[in-house]
Length: 97
Image (cartoon, rainbow, N blue to C red; front, side, top):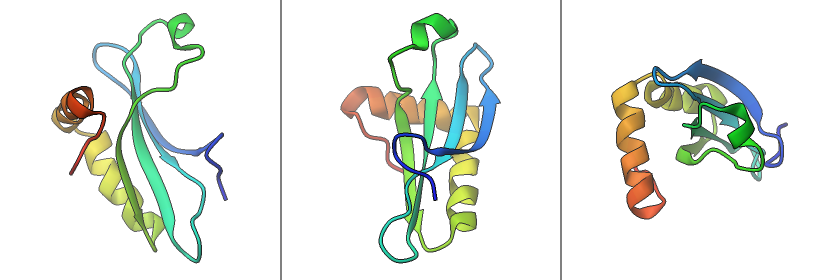
């Protein structure tokens, strides 16, 4: 089981302009409910990343970690979906899919 302070890394890829996108498993919820998220680090300089968490642009939860991962991988592997999620996040702090 992962925890919120150190979520388990499930997927990472570099972004074309620098930075990276992650899919991470969060702490298991009550029962058999799982949660994961997509975070996007736009800072290219690792020194500028210190002390700052990348914005979470999408979350999903359900009873199957495999299903959640597939859903979030669609977003994380698509540059257009990431750009849209970042625009939504910048507008109101939330990304909806």
